[in-house]
Image (cartoon, rainbow, N blue to C red; front, side):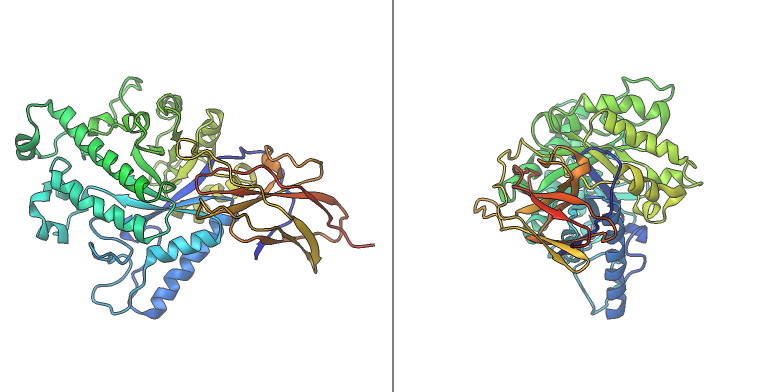
Amino acid sequence: MTLLSGCAIRAQPPKEEMRAVWITTIYSLDWPRMPHANAADIEKQKRDLQTILDQLKKANFNAVFVQARLRGDVIHLSKIEPQTTHISIRNTTHRYDALAFAVEECHKRGLECHAWFVAYPLGKENTTISKRNRDLVQKHRDEMYLDPGNPKTARYLLPLIHELVEKYDIDGIHLDYIRYPDMNFPDKTTFNLYGRGQDKSVWRRDNINRLVYQLYDQVKERKPWVQVSSSVIGMYDDHIKVGKSYQTALDVSQDPENWLANGKHDFVIPMMYHKDNLFFPFVEDWQSRSHGRLIIPGLGVYRMDKKEGNWTLNDLTAQVEATRQHQMGGQVFYRLKYLTDNTKGIMDKLAREYYRYPALLPPMPWLNNMRPSTPQGVEAVRDGNFMQLSWQPVRQPDRKHIFYNIYRSQNYPVDTDKATNLIATRVAETSVLISVNHAVESGYYYAVTSYDRFHNESTVSSPVYFVTGAER
């Protein structure tokens, strides 16, 4: 049974938006802070992640991107690649599946869990891939990369994606570094073998697009509700003049507008880690490229660090406001540490103002637009200092997962279009406990909707009326 707070909430953010954060596992940047060597270390890693997720849930975040593949290594127990030494030390006999644990803990809290998958970079070390598949790897600027132009690269990566989708109850595959590192990538030999007389820039773009298309179709064939997204360069091209040259998505053979226009992505996250005239003009530009799908800006909360730009709190909140003014799909923050550390008060600001209410994730009508059935039999009874709200489970044979959203209002009927009436989202059970204030006698109507993994919401149930004050 889920326990909800009965506290009053005053702010008025949108009812639907993604509120997410990247949880970085590489270099122990966010979680875990140290690799485990024994069972006690494993329990500490688990407790630390639970604390992180509790903080995010309390602040009304609704999704996380957990870095599952780093640089040719992974956080889960894979049959293809080794578990990263950022999770476990080498040669330890103690093992656990960190991704399976993360998914389970996210879902307990009503958070979506997307597997963040770094595509081409392999790091500086001589990785397992380099040893076993030398023809797939190119060295560039002291780093190793899978070669996007080699057809065998896609044949290597797609089984890794299939393993994630098949084995784990993830809500999304989130691609990172799905691009060339720069225009000087050393792929002359590959181009001579496979270029077939094309312009090289077109050929490179086609290589990335081909993998994206294959990956999207593979995911949707197996689990159509698993979302496919990518973090992409924050400026699409250079048509907006900013007085200085910056790397754009097209510079690195990345064409996310193509993916959206051709139905091969559910959303993209431009990494918009600049401010002022390097941010605001590009918000509208990205939105113009959405083709009816979602653009969800990635915001650089790390830039408030004194060593990373020393941004003010207002620099960041102005960007949150801009995403809402342009009716974008939400916000994703990089990195987690700066939120959980409450750098310059950012977590408090989000929780008290911008994220004061829960929010549903934006619907995806291109995948499925059929509403689930409406919950029936909503009841409310006193249970000590709580009210127990319960309802009958929705039976939906064509959908594997059904969740529930809870609304509360002093007015009848309950208006589910108002974010101020939403008090809980993605509840997995058919009963919740809501704390009540016995010092104040006040009556509320409570109502429930059902909700599926395509983010479709049912019509609202018949409400039940409950007086929260002391019984007479």
